[in-house]
Length: 207
Image 1 (cartoon, helix red, strand yellow):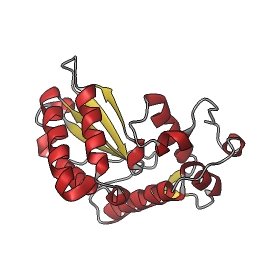
Image 2 (tube, helix red, strand yellow):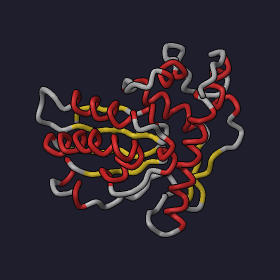
Image 3 (cartoon, rainbow, N blue to C red):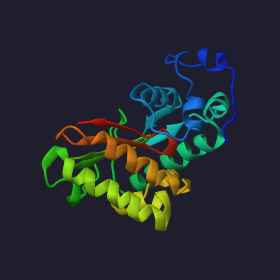
Image 4 (tube, rainbow, N blue to C red):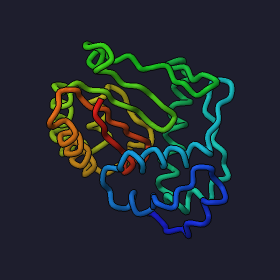
């Protein structure tokens, strides 16, 4: 459950503090984040992330972050990062010294070069889909989400699990599907969907 925090707490702990964005409120509303909110969430969390010898290291002193975005959200972030470290340990991906994670090869999303692919990041995954694949994706999220919940629907869509996202409620499948459908309208460029370990923090944009 999210707990409120006096905004001044983060102001002294991060270079990215923005008094115009209330992450507590944004995450509580269980909606798509705006682009500014999404990147602010990533910037705030990244203050606790570093890279060492092929793994992602999390600074354990994140009491202020827990109070700001909620204990469940922090636990989701930790579980997701640990999931990536396990994959790196099993040689299924490589985490470089600057935090780049080698892309996961998924044939379904690489048929049309860069317009259809999945990239991994310490905070989650980014899904690039052309217009046709976006339609398929949000339809699959709706159909599967009703049966297997959010995590199961994403696993079916992406071809791999998402660590901390596994705790997400099934209702997020519909929220994400609707956002993808709306972003896909009115153009032919396809969309970019950013899905962090904290499911309430997702964001979409045109490619």
